[in-house]
Image 1 (cartoon, each protein chain N blue to C red):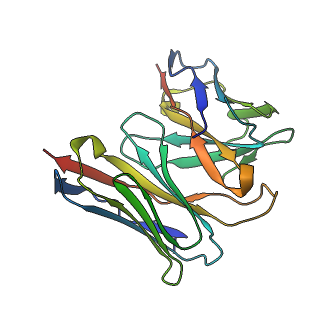
Image 2 (spheres, rainbow over the protein chains, first blue to last red):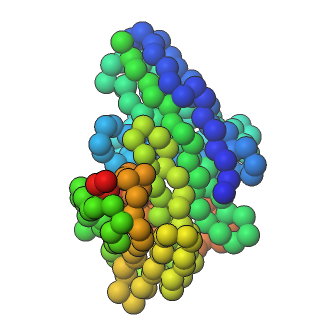
Image 3 (cartoon, chains in turn purple, blue):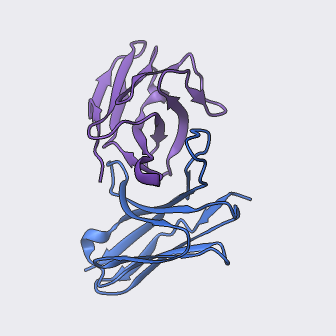
Length: 117
Length: 115
């Protein structure tokens, strides 16, 4: 299967600071990447869809000015949590859509655990 | 009604048992079907991928799609404690090169295999 990496794997920051999380597809080009957040023992919640070279599409209730998404290349998307607060503490997971050879699957990164103090 | 319904569990079975995980869906246009496994504090891992109806087997795992009933299943034979995880089903419509379609996920079933 394809490989998607995320960096950092965990981060602790002070309230009011910004945090950037990177998502990379290592062995394929992904025109579409997705950002999810997940609270303990809950299901994945889609935050936004990131398309290479265009603006991200945010799900209802997700603040686009709070969660900045950039998809500057076919292998890299970044999520920046601006002015982070303790309620932003969560597990953030990215995924990359693989549509090679007529297939349609998503491969997930290992996730980033964000703790805001 | 959600597009994809999945029993959240938890489901607890003894080691060695056959596990059956299921999802139902309402969109008859879904053609791609996937099962993911997620361990605690990890990203989901793609387990099985099928296109249209039928069965697909990979080791101890069998994925089954019944499009007439809008029902998909994942069977795990000879279950092991290491299979304890949350299992998510997922599906999508074919949209050519369009990026407009989404992959829709079930909410996940928590599975526990007792030694």
